[in-house]
Image (cartoon, rainbow, N blue to C red; front, side, top):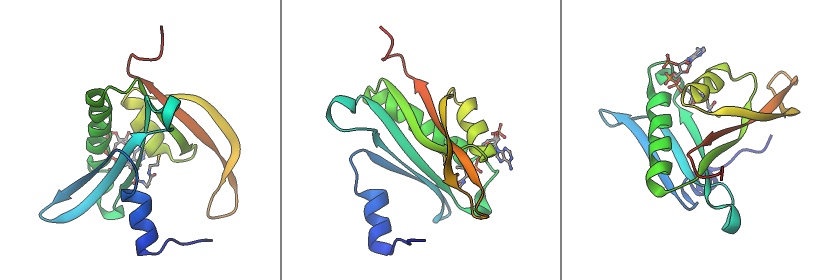
Length: 135
Ligand SMILES: CC(C)(COP(=O)(O)OP(=O)(O)OC[C@H]1O[C@@H](n2cnc3c(N)ncnc32)[C@H](O)[C@@H]1OP(=O)(O)O)[C@@H](O)C(=O)NCCC(=O)NCCS
């Protein structure tokens, strides 16, 4: 499996248009989210985001705080909606969290993600309409 080195990881997380949020307590990073346009040019009115919460910090509200920040950021920047492109269908905490923030599963690509044990899981496309896509 390919692994990113530090420079590759930094470019992947920080090198794109948009913003990066960091949740920290007492100088310790608990989680982070990156956000910005899902597509360039004619697709740039729809945003997207990615999230990571440190294993030891999970289940304590960090993901929800970052998710709420991401939704607020997109609203304030004037985005029409937010699209999550690849939420693993077995990631129950993520799916429940995004649903609770108003996202819905638009569709699922069957078997598109290989789990560590080799089994295949679907990838959900999840969408939150911020009021800008329905005429
Ligand atoms: C998904 C992730 C971002 C959630 O972050 P978190 O800080 O653990 O989430 P929170 O503590 O804010 O919990 C938010 C919601 O998730 C759900 N949840 C949390 N832990 C759960 C668990 N063990 N089982 C089921 N649901 C759970 C609950 O619905 C919770 O709602 P509540 O606030 O009403 O209790 C985090 O687990 C993570 O980084 N996972 C690995 C990377 C990843 O999956 N990124 C997202 C890809 S789409």
